[in-house]
Amino acid sequence: MTMSDMTDSLSKPAGQDHRKSAQFVAEKSCPQPNSHVAKSFAGARELLRSPDVRQAGGEALRMVIDNPDHVSFFFLDGEVHRKRRASVAGYFTPKAIITRYHPIINDTMDALIAELQATGTGILDEMALLVAANVTAEILGLECAGDPLGMARSIHEIRRTTDKAEAERLRDLFYDRHIAPAVEASRKEPKDDVISYMVQENYSKIAMMMEVSTYGTAGVSTTREFIGMAAWHLFDRPELKQEFLDADEAGQFAILQEILRLDPVTSFLYRKAEVDMPDAAEGPIKAGDIVAIDLRSANLDQEAVGECPLAFDGDRAEKVRNMASYLNFGDGPHRCPGSQVALHETRMFLDRLMRVPGIRLEKPPVMNLAANTQSYEIREAVVACDKV
Ligand code: HEM
Image (cartoon, rainbow, N blue to C red; front, side, top):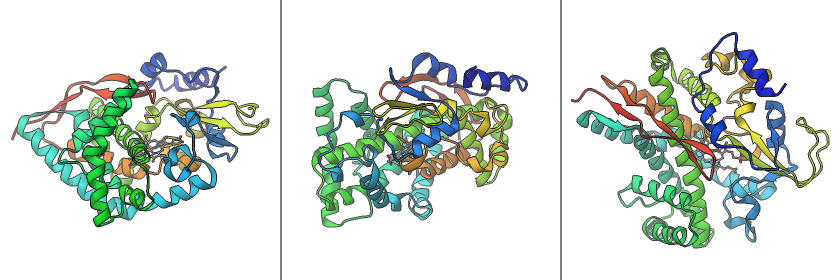
């Protein structure tokens, strides 16, 4: 019996499966061919925490790392990775979230809600994109040229372009418009952001572009999709929406983590084994093997997350206290540094949106698959409210 068979049969008594993206992702995406798939929670976590594996996601295995100081830390491992992570830790502290990002989220929500109420309708994922883009632009210290949405769209477009020459042209445009002015400003007056760090460390133009794209994917796209998914859950289940609105901050975070457990934005993380791992919990792994860590399956492992794993359970976090955020944001040295930023953005977005008089989902979203990350995209959802 596979683990997903086990979870299916175990959740049947409750008869509830609250996942929205499972079928879509199962039909459209699969782990890389020839990879060793880790499905259990314990096995997945063991691999993510192991010092004997290296990053194999994205372009990691094709990259030539001649100067680790100028490569996005997503692609690094070991001591160089630890050092680089330490250098960005300040952008993700509770203090930075409250003093730097809360005002940005609040201002963005003021503008978005005012526009929504003036027109009576809005596109959910575009609204989410603006919040995620504004916060990430602040972390990076990018020059938005008065158009943060345009900036976020450009990053998205560069990532989606498969034509090399076109991608290069778009990258150059992006550099001239958004990075070069920020670099110039930082030379005159350095700030506490990623651009200033890169200027101080003499990053090349290509290295800067790579770092910005990593944040664009890791910080903007993921949060945009998660806000869309979480909103969809709340719109579909009025009792859950009410529970969310009645909860305190910790309760709202627990609801969001439970939604993300059921519908994780990231399906697979990849690692390459550096040595033979004969005793791995997922069965023997050989040096050089690629392991696909299946976050969806791991997050449904009832050994870790408790009974009825396919059902939303607002009290689950209390019952399995030691699991905290499951594997929603990965684990081990590469665990998402922006998890708290993302949770704050999503919580504040939904708390404001769901309180707007007359708010409703006029048109449910369609799901697309993001080709390079294999994650779902939530698009075309239209929200409507009373006009004022
Ligand atoms: C709901 C939103 C988000 C989700 C689901 C998410 C998920 C993840 C996951 C699963 C990883 C681990 C990758 C791996 O182990 O290979 C990761 C890494 C990362 N995330 Fe997030 N993330 C989110 C939001 C953010 C935000 C808002 C930022 C920053 C503004 C961010 C920045 C990063 C970075 C820089 C990494 C690479 C870390 C490293 O390799 O050490 N993420 N994210």
